[in-house]
Every structure is written in structure tokens, then in C-alpha cells.
Length: 218
Ligand SMILES: Cc1cc2nc3c(=O)[nH]c(=O)nc-3n(C[C@H](O)[C@H](O)[C@H](O)COP(=O)(O)OP(=O)(O)OC[C@H]3O[C@@H](n4cnc5c(N)ncnc54)[C@H](O)[C@@H]3O)c2cc1C
Image (cartoon, rainbow, N blue to C red; front, side, top):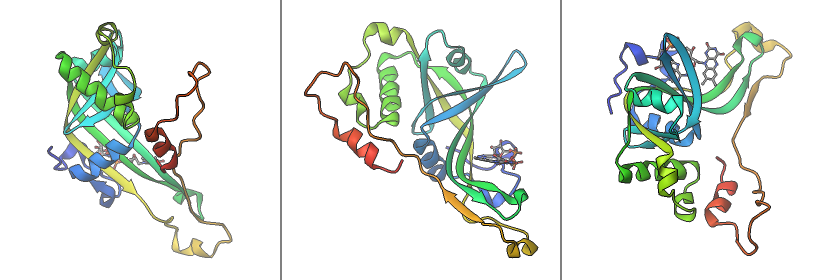
């Protein structure tokens, strides 16, 4: 994966918050549960949220055969994808310096349809396990009809940038004496206690991988 900050991916504002190495970028992509894909069609910009998974230096996406998004990605036109993880609210003494702590990534790449059945299933496994590690092996796999109704596309990550803000607010020197509470309210995503499907057969216990997820922080 090439991560030299060319003009397109160079973080201009507060450049010290910009990172271009695969390790930093991949970690954020893998932790984000979903992303937003933007593309231009007929001269109009569009942005669509969706689920992703990373397979080495490729991203994979799935959707209905009739999906405009999947069709657009398969066309091979360049797309941009963004991933955001919120880490906290940053409350400064002045409104001007309010901010958020975050880790975000923007990637650029071109997509193609995955037609080979084994590659398609491998990508679907990656997407399923990205949402919930362990789920693919537990749930019923797609049958021929479901597989035919699903498009799976892969996008090679050509260029990517990460931006990370962490730490306390930065106020103007003269504002530090103001009687205004300032600091960070950390934010972490957490899953709550699972609610059983009303039609769940009795005797099916909560799998360990779900228990692990609800006990984990993210
Ligand atoms: C949760 C959240 C809240 C934010 N709130 C604000 C806000 O209120 N106001 C504001 O001005 N900015 C905000 N930002 C930062 C914003 O995303 C841009 O970084 C900012 O507009 C400055 O961009 P730029 O001019 O440096 O880069 P641009 O010239 O706009 O972009 C150049 C390239 O830099 C890279 N890049 C820019 N921003 C990011 C990013 N966040 N993550 C990864 N790569 C990036 C991309 O590759 C992009 O193509 C927020 C970011 C996040 C994640």
C-alpha cells in the first residue's frame, strides 16, 4: 500500500494530525463498523453509508444486485471512502475552540465486481466477521439464490490518509482564567445486553463471541 502524502491526501489544516502509514490507517478502518462512500454520477456528488471489511490493501463491500452504489463502485470510476471513530467531546472555555477527539481515515480507490464464487464467499465472510468476529462460522452460509442476488465489490486502496485528534482543549492564553468548565468527555461505543428474537428456539445459548462483544469496550 502506498501512503506518501500526495497533494490529494495531504492533511492541510494542523498537518501534525495527519498520518499516512498503513498500520495507523488499517487500525482505524478495522475498528470502524461502517463507512461513507462518495462518488460522482452524472455530475452530481453522492455520499452513501455502508458496511465494509478490509482484506489486506483492499476494501470489500456488498449489497443488492440492483444497488446503485454497488453498480457505481463496479464501474471502476474513482471513489472516496471515509471512516470515523469518535473518541470524545472537547469542551474549551471559548466556543471557538470546541472540538472532538477522533480518529478518521479517507481513502481513494477504484472498484471492481467480484465474480469468482470462492472470492465472493471469502469477501462475504470478511464482511460478516468484520461486523461480529465469529458470526460467519455460526450462521447459515448464503445459498445460490442469495449469492446470485448479492453483488460484492472490491476496491484497492490507492491512496489514504488518517487524521487523529486527541488530548485536552487548547484555549487562548487569556481564557484560562475564565470560570467556565473545560475538559474532555470521553466517548466509547458499547453494545448493550442482547435481546433474543421472539422466535428463537428454546435451548439456544448466547454464543461466546457475542458475550465477548458486549463485554468489550468497542
Ligand atoms: C468527528 C470529526 C469532526 C470534525 N469537525 C470539524 C469541524 O467542525 N470543522 C472543521 O473544519 N474540521 C472538522 N474536522 C476535520 C475535517 O475532517 C478536516 O480535517 C478539516 O476540514 C481540515 O481539512 P484540510 O483543509 O486539512 O484538508 P482538505 O484540504 O479538506 O483535505 C485534503 C486531504 O486531507 C485528508 N483529510 C482531511 N481531513 C481528513 C480527516 N478528518 N481524516 C482523514 N483524512 C483527512 C484527505 O485525504 C483529503 O483528501 C472534523 C473531523 C472529524 C473526524
